[in-house]
Length: 254
Image (tube, rainbow, N blue to C red; front, side):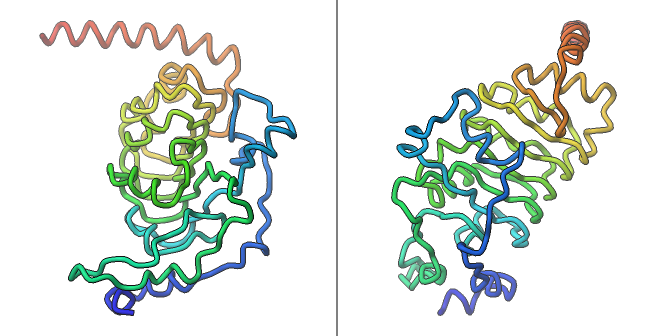
């Protein structure tokens, strides 16, 4: 098609990359999207039948550089929202969508996808257009509860994630995040239970763990380690002193 001819060879190759969904088995682990789909309630059999949770959309290892590229490539596994049959080219003309023919419909209409894997790509940022892309690939984007952004090139914690209040798991390890303070954008997420930041330059921040524990009072796991009661007590005392000193320095500058 005209769109395929204009796209870089990399994207052309990816658009034809297709793995049969039936051949992929989702392995459930303590950190899996299925376990973290709803951290506050126990799912009964009746609940699961009424509100079934599907596998995550897996866009990992696809050499994605910008979030907009999710429009041009199908996930390796999982069931994305139906893409449009026609799209606009650069001249504003309607042309067939190259990924439409390979799109696979979910086996049942009410199957919810609440998790997305974007790890091991080349993302440098998640701009506001992320919200639009999520509406295009997820039936209910506001139910997003699990996101893996590990092993990318993010330079700060994406503040755009702060509006997804059902997020319970956010993986950001092995990026290029330098300022730990950028993580404060997610500090008010009420359902956040697991957060990873290790493997970033910010991990070298003095009192790194105590600062994270103090900033995120709701999380139960940090960098794949359980936060203990003793950890919480130390962090509470340290973070209170830290905020007091920070406020005093601010007042002295004023």
